[in-house]
Image (cartoon, rainbow, N blue to C red; front, side, top):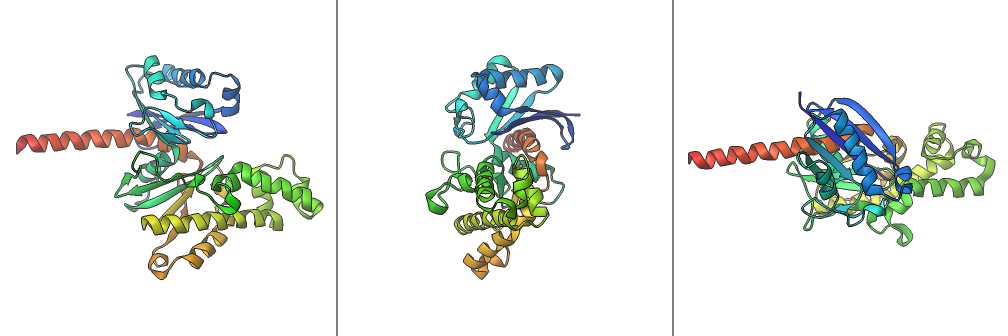
Amino acid sequence: MQKYLGIDVGGTNIKCGVISENGEILYQIKHHTPTLRQTKNVVGGFVSIVSELLREYPEINQIGIGLPGTLNKERTHALELPNIPELNNCPLKEHLLQAHPDKIFLLENDANAAALGEMYFSGEEMPEDFLFVTLGTGVGGAAIIDGQIFIGGDGNSMEIGHVVSENGKLLEQIIGKNGILTMAAEGVARLGSKTILSTMDPVNTKAVLEAAGKQDPFALQIFQKVGQLLGDSFVSLVRVLDVKKIYIGGGISATFPYLYPSLMESLNKHLTPYYLKDIEVKPAILGNHAGVLGAASLCIGYNALLAKAAQNAKTVKMD
């Protein structure tokens, strides 16, 4: 059985998984990203994490890595990772190959990887064209067009979290993890005992989700705001790309039931019947495993391209 190593690099955690060719998670572990950053040697620490896993699983030859930011078109360098700035302009693939010259390392934006993972491992028949948005420490986006990752002119399309939103702020500053926690903290300070969040310690995203589950009006209001702003951004994406199937994943995608009504309200308000008749917004199927499975799916996609190239070469030779 073929095995792959999938590594999902996030601002909060670095999640690693040994994945079978069928998408089964055989082993997983996570490392706290802020702890790694405190070492002042993020690159060396990351290479050590990979090396440790490859020592345990020497039979693995292909490693997929999802990164939370922009990469060069050749997928050898991390360019801008807002939540891990120590990796900005880092020739990460070169560092990995220096340690493991006999391995294949495949780097990709984390949202692109997660979208690919959804396509390969969800178990559902996916449309040829869909948008994929991740909600977590930041807000990521991906577009699959004709069954392929759409990377844009220089390789970094769909950076949805960095579009300008309300009051001149970037979208992920408002509805990413830190944005949600800021809204929660401000609300607790303003409302006091009128919200059950005032009785929770710590007030993290899990607490806000729990409060919403208990129908706390303020917690529900937070997710109403998240849904509205996310819906507004979807309006632009749908009109620009003319893609009408949207999946929402990421670490805080469990909030989907609470943000969905206001999200759809925004779409219904701003889109015409041409778009609305086919619009569909769903939670991602892979859930919290989307990151590592998406990273591993880069290996599946790589092998599929190799097989296609070999078949084309064979056809040309026969002609």
